[in-house]
Image (cartoon, rainbow, N blue to C red; front, side):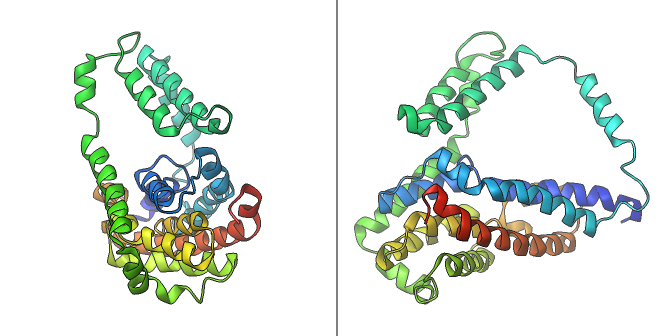
Amino acid sequence: VARSALPARGLMLAVTCAASIFDKMVLAGTSSILASGIIEELSGIRVSYAQWFLAYLPCDVLTVLACWRLMAWLFPDRDGVFDGCADLVRAQRDALGPWSAAEWRTAVLVAAAIGVWLTEAWHGVRPSTAALVIGAATLLPGPGSGASPWRRAMRLPVRTLVFTASALGMSAALAEAGALPYLTRGLVAWMAPLVDSRVSAAVVLYWGAFVYHLLLGAQNLLVTATLPAIVTLGLAEGHNPATLGMIWLFGTAGKIFPYQSGVLMVGYSFGSFTARDLIRAGLLLAVVESILLLLTVAFYWPLVGLG
């Protein structure tokens, strides 16, 4: 790869890695929604959208800064490849022209959904209910509605919905069948004596999830297969199961191989960066995220009810 292409490689890698990390920090990605459902189903503790958002807010901001500095260090722009990019971005923006009716409609509906999710504590409407209502609103005719409601309904990710529902059902089945204690002993029993404080939990669970993710590549499969055991461990040892579950989930954000995430496979398929680039950047980002999580869990999470 030409030296002048280094900054572009870093930029594409940063976008790809960040996309696989940030869906854990907001209760909107498939894995985070799945984890939230498992935690609530098994422990009775519900983490709201707003609490989840606030819990990871410091990590959000610091990850952006850390990712930028890391990619600038790994893929330096010594030849000034990005000089004048600001003018190029402005030109591309101006070429798009004003927002269309469909874009305004989408922005309003998304803003309404996020607003309802963040204010759940005030009105009591569950995020799932709000999502269903907003989703139904997208199918209604009106300005910017585009194709017929039936055609838009056919584009819904039915397979994703069925998978998420099946995964939640599997966790409930394990609990009802009494299989979770056996899974706990076989999978995470070694963690029990090590998880005795917020600091040790942040370190042990994060890197435990990182290692298990190498063995169980599919992210949602990992959450479905292991998170019930983590929640059960928290209940058995007197820890906050929501805290342990959220740490474990965040540990799956660290990835070094494309097979570990559909997002990484899509980014890798463009050929903009190599497998070696992903391993280097992924390992360094995993270390950075581990440190950020440790500081957040130790000093910040107790302030938002996740002691």
